[in-house]
Image (cartoon, rainbow, N blue to C red; front, top):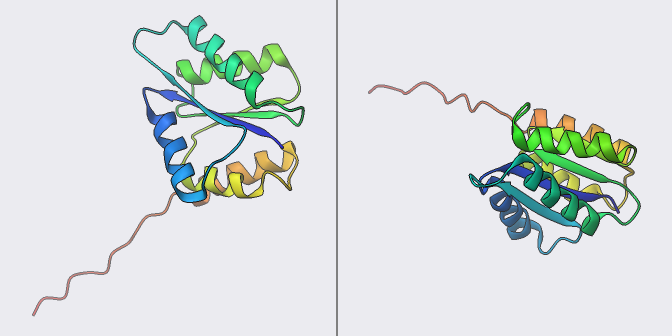
Length: 136
């Protein structure tokens, strides 16, 4: 099964993990790493690597980050480049994306999960267009 590591600024990743577990139950091979103010980029990279080591059973790992170009993304991308094949990075994680992936990752290989993540991430953003108020 593909491992997942959520990486974010502050406690967003931990909150996302908590929400996933609330909806789906306990999930194996899923961890969260949050960048704290006192963290160095190298320290964050080390903590991401530790999580990757714990969730990787040989089927690959996807690192999900909150914001493109920022420290969590940069550390994740750097790790993926150093590790080579089997470590992927997806930026812009959201709850609909993660829920769909958690439900499908036992049946789907790494490459398919990447496509599912991007598609569900996009489809998870919806504008609720409320009807106009009726004046009486």
